[in-house]
Length: 241
Ligand SMILES: C[S@@+](CC[C@H](N)C(=O)[O-])C[C@H]1O[C@@H](n2cnc3c(N)ncnc32)[C@H](O)[C@@H]1O
Image (cartoon, rainbow, N blue to C red):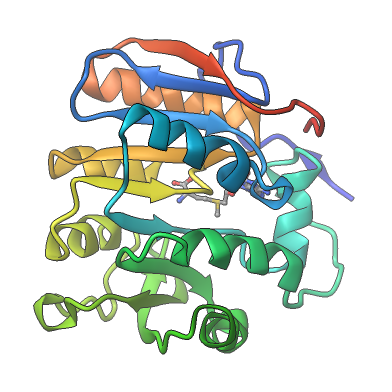
């Protein structure tokens, strides 16, 4: 198995730990990043109650989660890339937790997903959330065909996103549904937050990896000129990357 840290040389110097809630200073738009694990219930048990206490809520959900078991494992064991040849298959436990978060708050939802697992993801959304999502073909990272699975009662205002690259789809989706704060529980390096910032919206993210969280905070700081600050520690630090 190759063990390459894809982000080895990035500017990742903030002391982010699991359980940390960081923010970019200043009040609006809010940019929060919670370094935590969606499978451990860190959204329902920790972040969501914290948001409620602070009177903060999101009005759009946009996320690009891991697309299969192999990719999920590579994130879980802390590797940026994992070139092992293990079989790629659907990963119901992860997607179960992910879809619960997506549909918990009745906002418009958009999920990027590899073609291989698009159908299973839609089935799970139907059975768990009782929603019949729409699917269009978009492009991931200017190369890979993938799907955007979305559901919103504002479908009539949706631009035609077919064939659009995923560096642009968050911005177009969020604009079309009038987003003021987006939630992305798999924030990674922050495409969703960058796009939100472009349209003047705020973002609340979760990210499993402290390393990527740090990268994200530095990148958003460079983009906005705002300073990353640790605003709280919520929940456990049990699993580490
Ligand atoms: C496909 S990447 C997101 C890419 C993102 N759009 C970007 O701009 O970098 C999926 C992210 O989900 C994170 N992740 C994986 N499992 C997670 C979990 N259990 N809880 C929270 N984040 C998780 C990974 O570390 C990874 O950064």
